[in-house]
Length: 258
Image (cartoon, rainbow, N blue to C red; front, side, top):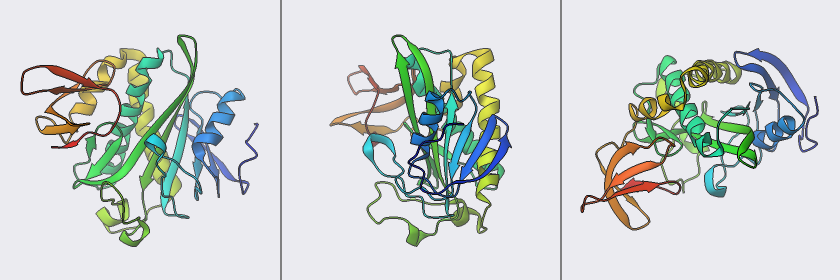
């Protein structure tokens, strides 16, 4: 297997995951970059890459993702879906549902979702999703779904300038967790949901996501515009209804309570 030279310490262990191989590194700059390199080298769908210490993790729109050593799950999964590129966002939304299911199974109450990529507990962010694809013409070569989950972090581990206050499994449940065990649980839930997409189609994703959406029916603001959150359309865009009755689709950017 061809691994990027950007890894700063070697392969710690390699295990079987439900979706395929789970490759675990003691330290890496970015699991997204590692997974992309592996996918370009022909690594099959389902392989997941995890780092116990991620030194240059990234979130959406260029933000960084804090992953202190041994504290959080930094996980990236290689997918080769037979979908159009515009449908790729649905798999990121699906991953957020899988994370919510997994942490509830671990004893976290009522995990909710915030568009487009946040998993919340008591209105505090516990996880985020980052999807990055490689496209050839109208076909998607592969998609890397990155999952960052705060696991054993405490309040002092988080930067003070976070847009949404953060929490962790430790803070929610009062116990520490084994990181590979948590990663395997997420992969198990994601595999079940992804198999459903492959057999039933992407139409299952919006209703699954909306059941956990925190902001349904609330007034939301996006780039100076205010509307009522109605749900997702078929390709994962957020639908807002303005006071004049017009409907607006939001494809990117932050959507906040008005």
